[in-house]
Amino acid sequence: MYPRIRELREDHDMKQREPASILNCSQQVYSNYELGQRDIPTDILIQLSRLYNVSTDYILGLTDNKKSH
Image 1 (tube, rainbow, N blue to C red):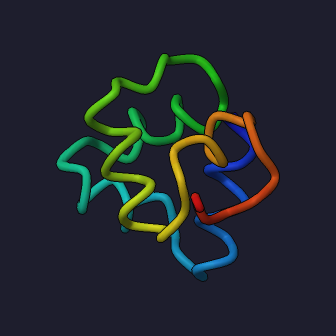
Image 2 (spheres, rainbow, N blue to C red):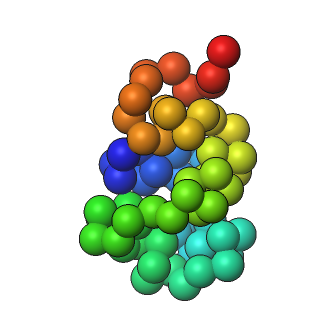
Image 3 (cartoon, rainbow, N blue to C red):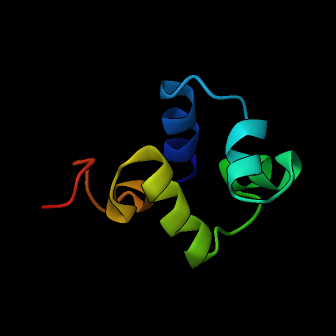
């Protein structure tokens, strides 16, 4: 799941500080999410899925379909 949030961020041409600001966390905390050094809380997972317009299942690696049906 952790590489997926990095790929999604890069696909949206964003620096780490941009989603961190939207999520109201520091760039370091966001970096820790991408590196898998910190678990992603459920509320942040939901915000990420909305930000990148993908399903939470996609972020979690449960499916390769970006959108839920």
